[in-house]
Image (spheres, rainbow, N blue to C red):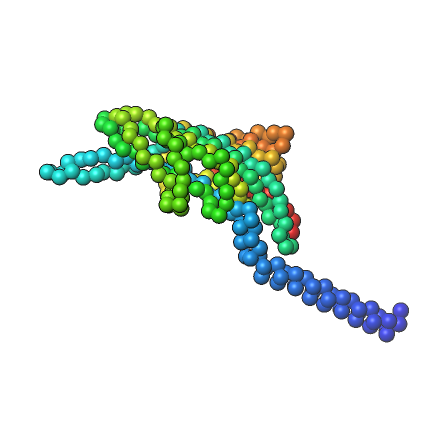
Length: 252
C-alpha cells in the first residue's frame, strides 16, 4: 500500500467520523431540546404521572371553653385499607422518544372509627392523583353518601361530611379508571404516619417493572399469565415512604 493511498484512507475515515459525530450531536440536541415540549404534549394527550394519596379523615366536636363553645378538629387514622390497582401498559412514541403510558383501574375500600364516646361530624377528603386527565366510572362514597365532584372542590380535594355515632365505624369507597404516564405512586400521608390493617394488590400485564426511589418493595409477588400480582400487606406500619411502581421503558 502506497503512502498516498494510506493518507487517503485515513482522510476518509476522519471525514466519516466527523460526519457521524455531527449527526449524532444534532440528534442529541434535537432530542434534549424537545424533551420537555414532547413530555407536556404526551401528558396533555394521555395523562401525567399518578400520585394517589390515601383519604384523610377529621372529626369535629363542640367543646365548652368557659361560657363559650368552640369547635375542635381531631385527625383520625384509617382503621383499614383494602386497595386494588390493575395496570395495562402501552408504549407510545412521540417524536423520537418512547413513553410508557398506562391505564389504571383503581378500587379502594377504607374504614375509620369515631373513638369518642359522643357523636361527631366526620369530614373525609379525597385527592385526585393527577390533573389534566380523565376519570371514568368514578365513585366516592362515604357511608351511604355519594359525593359528586364539581369545579369548586376538585383541585382542593373532594370533601364528604357525615355524622358519626359514638364509637361508630364508617366505610369509604373510592373507585375510578384513569390514564397515567411512567410511574404510579400511593402515599399514606405527607409525613410519618401509622398504617393499620393495610392491603394493596397491584396487577400488571407486563413482566418487567421497577420501584421508584424511597418506595416500599412488595410483601409478596406472584407471577401471572400476563404479568405480576404485587401485594403490600401491613398490620401496623410506621413509615414516611410511599408505594410505587415504575413502568418498563422502551429503548429510544
